[in-house]
Every structure is written in structure tokens, then in C-alpha cells.
Length: 292
Image 1 (tube, rainbow, N blue to C red):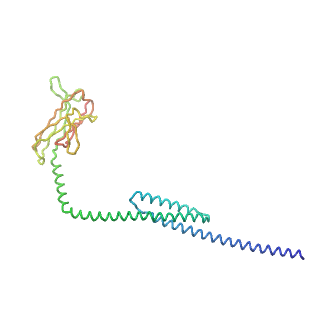
Image 2: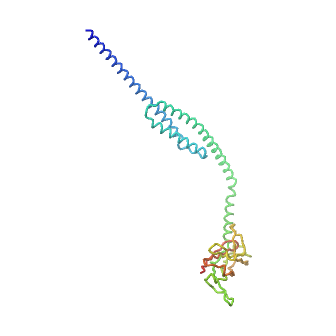
């Protein structure tokens, strides 16, 4: 009988322990579910805060390079933090708290950065407004002179273009000197003693009549001027080296010109020679000769 009582007592104790274990497991399960729910809510809230911050940064345009670079750097930090939060799977509240602190730090930096951007934008906007007002005043003051100035420029341009003396195509031949002293044409470089260049100044009733300087330039393939006589400035601001110059009296009618340039045949090599003409400081045209 005593033995049976002991068995019954043991069964009751085991039953009570089982109930306690079931209850304890149930409590633990409820606690885990609660912790998991809280963790997911905290994670989602943190992710939402970070997404809103990234959205605020995206599309912000800053002209100052230093601020723009810093803006890009802060945006990269936020995106990296976002990736870290998304990849957080276990209920690590310590790591979640660490990310929350990093987000708070980013928010403080963001406020400072946006204050700088707002100040810069406000200054730029004020400066732009001042420039707009100043430009409007200048436009009002200058509007009366714009039309007259444009007409004067157009007239000056037309006069300048119309005043240029045009020429017929430049013609040139290489010449050799015979024993009799007579010059005849040649195509051989080692027999060239002279170049004969001719062209006509065409009629131009607009340009001012009088003395006109005409320059002839003979240049070899190496861009070296043959038998240079000097240098002269052009009206476009450049300067050229010339081979021959002619001082002619132009009275607005057609005028034929001939230039005979004597050269040392030892200086004339095989190749292409470019003969250019310049009338009154303006390029008029050129021709080429190939010597064997």
C-alpha cells in the first residue's frame, strides 16, 4: 500500500512538472513571437525613416561642386545603411539600436548640409534677381541705341566687304633663262631661274582709289618662302613673309599686273610650289606649280 502511494505521488509530481514545462514553453513562445513582432516593427520603422531621408536627397541639385560631392557622399552612406538594415534577419536588437544611432547621426549631418544648401540657393536666387533687375534697366537704357548700332554695323560690314578688291585667278609659270638671255617656260626645278605671275585687279567702284600694295608669296612644300624680301601685316591681324611687292595706282577700274621673280636655281627643289597674292592687306587667291 505504501508502495502504491509512492507511485501515485510520483505520477502527480511528474504531471505537475509537465504542466509547468508546457506553461513555460507557451510563455517562451509568446515572448519570442512578441519579440519577433517588435523587432520587425522597429526594423520597418527604421527602414521607412531611412527611405524618406534618401528620397529627400534624391533629385537635389547643387551647383557648388564641394557641396554636390558631399551630398553624393551622404547619399551613399544612407544607401549602404539601407542595404545593411534590409539584410538584417536575426532578432539582433543591439545591431538594430546601432543602426538607429547611425541614422540619428546622419539626420544631424543632413540638417547642417541642407542649411548650407538653402543658404547657397537663397544667395544665388537673390543674386539672380538682382541681375535680372540690372539687366532690365540696361536693356531699357540701351533699347534706343540697339537698332541704330545694328544698322551701323551692317553698313560697316557691307562697306568693308564691298571695298575688297577682287582679282582674276592667279596664273604662274616657272621660267628658265637661255644663253641669249631670253626667258622661256620650264617644268624642271633644276632649270628654274624665275617665276612669272600675273592676274588682274577687277573693277570696284566702292573702294577708295589710289595707291595699293600688292604682295606675292611663293612657298615650297616645306612651307618656306622662296627668295623672301620682307614681312607685311594683313588686315586680319596675321603677318606674312612675301617674295615680291608691287605698288600700283588703282583707279577703281580693271588693272593687269605682272610680277617676275628671279630666283637662284640651286634653291629650287622638286615639288609643289604655292603662289599666293595679297591685295591691300587681304588674301586674293593662289595657284600651284609642280616642278620635276
